Length: 164
Image (cartoon, rainbow, N blue to C red):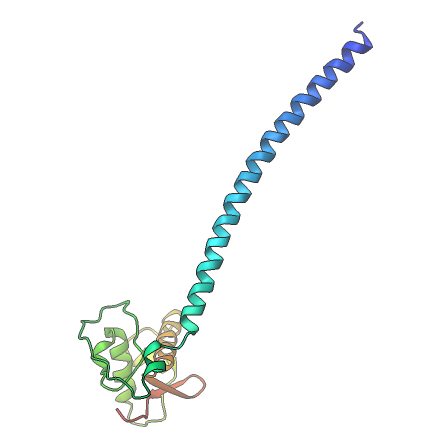
C-alpha cells in the first residue's frame, strides 16, 4: 500500500501541472484579447474620424460667400458608379446607365403624378418581383437623396421640379 505522504505528493504534482497548463492558456487568451482590443480601438478611431470629416463644413464654403463654379469632369459612368449630388450644370449623362434609365422613365411619365417602385420596375422591363422592386426603390431613394428625383408622397417618385 502506498504511503499517505506519497499520495499527497503525487496529488500536489498533478495540481501544479494543471496550474501551469491553465497559466499558459490564460496568457494565450490575454494576448488574443489585447490584439482584439487593438483592432477595436483602430476601427473606433477610424469611424470617429470619418464621422468628423463628413460632418465638417466644406472649407470653400467657409472662405468665400460667393459660390465657386465647379468644373464638370466628364467621365463615362459605369454600373456601380457613385451617384453624384445634383448641382447646376450636371446632366443625367453623369449617372450610371441604370440610373439614367430610371430618371428617363420618370421624365417620360405622361401623367406627372409620379410612379411607385413596382410601376417603375415594370416600365424598366424588369420582372415585378420583390427583389427587383426593392432594387429599383433603393436606386430611386438614392436619386432622391442626391437631388435628382423628388418623393413628394412616400414611395411615389417623380422628376425633380427644380429648374434644370
